[in-house]
Image (cartoon, rainbow, N blue to C red; front, side, top):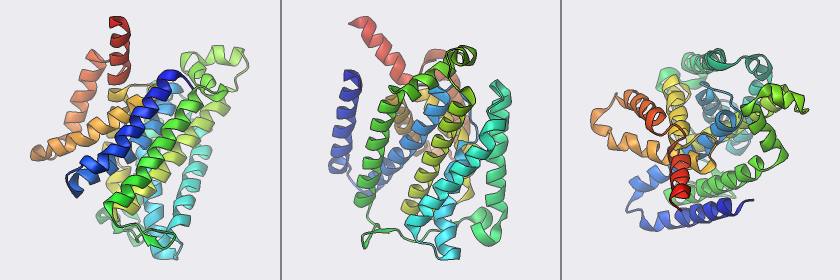
Length: 310
């Protein structure tokens, strides 16, 4: 792992350890928990989009699969919440595996439309299976417990998601420096050149798509168990747009950019509470402005400027 990556990990660990001691109340702890959950989801999407160059507008659908697995399976089938999390991740991985080959043959806006269609299908099923999912109104999630301890306090949830975030950032940094990560960057640069040097392009595309889906589903399950309630909004198009905006604003092909983008745009709706209903418009404006003035995202742009100054 590079020295800069180690420095970034150390800073991340320090910030994660300090937050619980400076958060003035449970409201800010709630925001910190949601920031951490979103950061891991965005990181998984950035592996697909930023490193492998595969656009996905259906990532929120996998978040919805994980969230509703944690709600539906324990409630209707008596499955333990921990097992429900695993089954949700497996279901997301299987769906991703099945659709990856035909979808990832496409490129550009065709790929974007295909993944959008996948997300719409998942969202439609969630909204219309009233007997299982509660329909548009959503449904409650049974409390999660670990080793006999009920996870109901914000502090406990914070440390869980903080550890998950740190491990995912550490894993992503190692992944992108591995042969697998170099293959992904090769795909982004040129699929033809990657094939020439012996990279199995369909296999690597499928693997990163499945990995991204599994991580998104797992974090959707954690979000559902933390919130105690799920709604179809987790899987809809607006959520997908928000996730993509986080990737672009933070920085494509930037691990720490994923974290920064998630932090900034998870905080933004709280600042825009007085103009409820305009969040999607604001996200769109931020995306446009970012593409014009910060085309590489906040973190890569600032890093480049710091290198020039030094």
